[in-house]
Length: 368
Image (cartoon, rainbow, N blue to C red; front, side, top):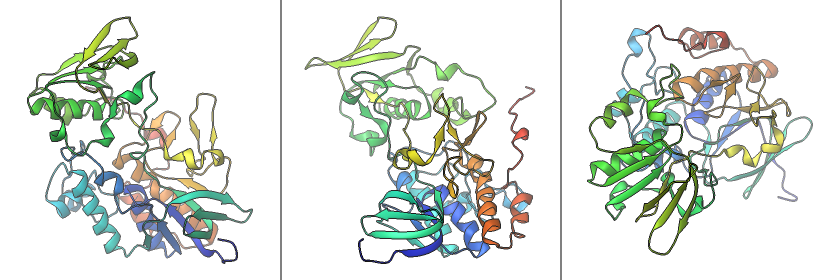
């Protein structure tokens, strides 16, 4: 705001989800002066999940045997222990994140919508409707769930994106079409089928048939198990466009076939990226892939770091929590080194596989 001096911090983290809370816990242990800015509330993306949606990665209280819970975002914590469940719902996981934030006494300001990040030469100005803040470093940890991909094909806006569903109980009708065969699409189809609905899923890649050692590229074992107990029509076709003639939806497939749905098609084509707000501060290659340094820092804007499921390196996808949490300490170390802060406690993160700095080990090959 004009005439008002901006508050100064060493680090500003944007987003209080799994990534923001996780990296914040490390900064707090390192004694770095920071604040987390969240436009809604802690775990907002998880709180927006459909009521029936559950984690596909299992939580287990294995910490005592040197194996961190797959869904934990901080050492010595476990969603399984905190929540008493193996596959948490979104609301349950948000409660775990709130517990971690409380335990580490993280400085979090909610209802602060970051509108712009402005490099200043010796740091950044972070702009929001409530004013400006100065900092030396920014860690972008905003989630993706609030940015559904609704432009996959012509007429996709006529469909309803799965991320807008509060509960599959609210759907009226007996015949449904889901476009997209990834985890969110199959989860939608399964939940509808469990409610006695007739369901078909359209996906040109036929994700349900893909076998790959990288779980980011195929359906999880949990989802494949659930598929065995429902009757769903799986159709390996790509959608070209959707039209509505007033009484039904016409789905035009790439191969020329037309399908008809009496109910609004459900769009499960994934998510765009929160980076749209700061896109000009990052560099992308000719294929549109985000370019980051070995410390997950913007290759275009020094001091701007990225944590969370959008991190990728040379084809390695860090979209699961147990993957992207291994990069929190990399970012924290880079910032601490530049601030002249002691980083000896990060040895504990290396000991518990929470400091993945050698990406050559990420060969997902399986013998059987």
